[in-house]
Structures are given as C-alpha cells and as structure tokens.
Length: 308
Image (tube, rainbow, N blue to C red; front, side, top):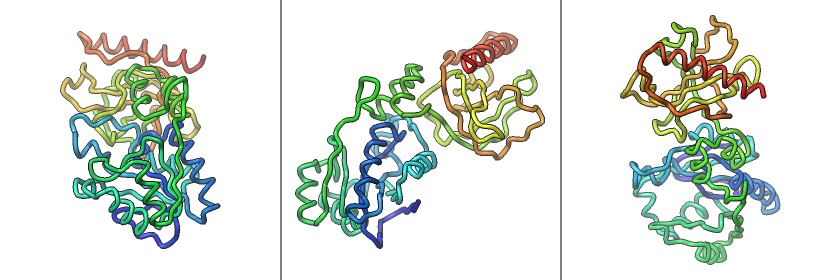
C-alpha cells in the first residue's frame, strides 16, 4: 500500500474516499468495499484521503474525542481491507481555511487526480464545513469526476459511527463495541520497561507504550494478545492511571499474560491487545496487600471468562 503525506502530487488517477476513519468501523468498511469495487471500473487506485491530527484536536483540543486507533493502527487496517493508497493530509488551521471549491480543485482534482469520489450522506468539506453533497456533485460535473454516496450503515440496531463505538466503550460494553467495529476493540504498541512492581508481587506485566494519553476505555479487562509465539494469548490488563501506585500518573496499559515464562523478554516487541470483557473500574485500594488480593481475583475472573 502506498502511503503519502503533505500536499498530494499523484501521478495516476485515483478513486477517492475522504474521512478520519477513526476505528475503521463497519460503516467505514462498507465504504472501503464499495471504493475498491468501483476503482477498477473507473481506472483508478482505491485511495483514502485522511487527516492527521483529527480536526477537533486543532480547534477544540480539550473537547476532542478519544482516538479509537492510532495512525499506525489505522494504516494497518486500511491495508488489510485492500486500500491501495492512503494520503495523510496534515490538518492545520491554514489547511482548514481552504474554501470548499479550493479543497476540491487543489486536493482532489490537481493533487489526487480523482475520477471517482465516494462520501457518506453527512459529508461536509471546506472552510467552516461550507461544502455539502450538492456542491460536491456540482463540482464533480465541472471538474470531471463521478460522485457516489454511501448511506448510513447500521449494526446492532444503531448507526455505525466512531461516536457509537466510543459510547459503547465508555459504558464497558465491549461486545457492543466489537459489533460496531467488526472485531474486538484493541490497542497496539511497543513493550517498554516499567517499575517492575508486578513482577515483585507475582504478576509480571508487559507495559505497552500508549500513543495518546486519552484512551477511550479505562479499567481492568480480560484480554487476548496478538504478536507473541502463539496467537490469542490470554491475559488480564489494567488501563488507567494506577491510583494505588501512582495517583497522579499518566494512563498506562499493563498486561499480565497467563502462563508466560517469567524469563521471557518482551521489551521492544510490538503487541496488539484485544479487550474482550470489562471486569471493573479502576479503584484506589486502602493498602498494597488489598491491591494484590484484588489482582488475584481479577486474574481468576479473566481466566474464567476467556475459557467460557
């Protein structure tokens, strides 16, 4: 898969869809399936135009939504779904000031040589989101590209959207989030060194480096881990600030892998942690001994749920 950044300078025609694609949920997947199916007929490479960072992280950083996927995770999923080209536009206030017509002419037509543009029925574009579907269709006729629309995709009785996934995750509904995503919610990252407290109390953990400090879930979870010697390695994970250990710390992801050789060296490995069941919220315990007892209960419950 071709990955380009900055201002686009395509050398061949493209069939393009546009969006943040956070989470790459079932609605996104339906759009990508149509894009790849139509790309051949219009002689274009199936191309995703996405933005980094998320626009709301520029305009309302304190109210920006938690990310469901890092850029790396998003790119891996898009590649697996058959996308041929991803162009990552750096989203800045200057970029956001492009008028709707300038966005189409400079980015889609001159930059990406779009012959086919697929959007959702709520698509808006250009400065102050002034451009709508009707304007895009008018500009398509002017500049010679076909406009196609994918209407709402529903899953589990609701519109598949990144917001719906975040809502399910915030409620601890991991099964509901998985239905919307078409796969378990996961976080991937590199294993880094920690304070080794888990090893001292009999529950060694792999500490996963988080790309963002505002994960959409917090608490204790039964998990499966990909990227080890065998797939679906079971474990229990804590995602949060560890109030009993570091009351004012940043969020961390710590995974205790069941029955893993204590001498295993995981540092530097890239793992994907799939969150299958939420066991409880994080809590501050009155003593370290009480924390250790609860970790034992969490591990036992996670084993039971994963073996069910």
